[in-house]
Image (cartoon, rainbow, N blue to C red; front, side, top):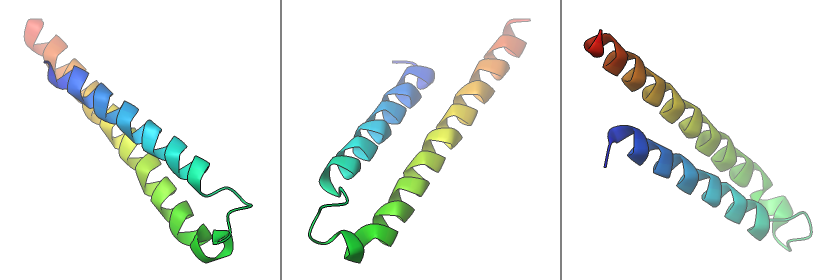
Length: 69
């Protein structure tokens, strides 16, 4: 499996984790007020990880194209 494909799979897994978090901790969750900040922080860093993986993927593509030239 290529690096690019593996990065895409990790991105998809991160998106699934975000969906699970959103589904678990809705505003009517009994502990919502206790976990709101931590869940928000986790979601932020998961999203940032996804952006970083996209940057890595683009870098790999550019490097691959330059080597082919």
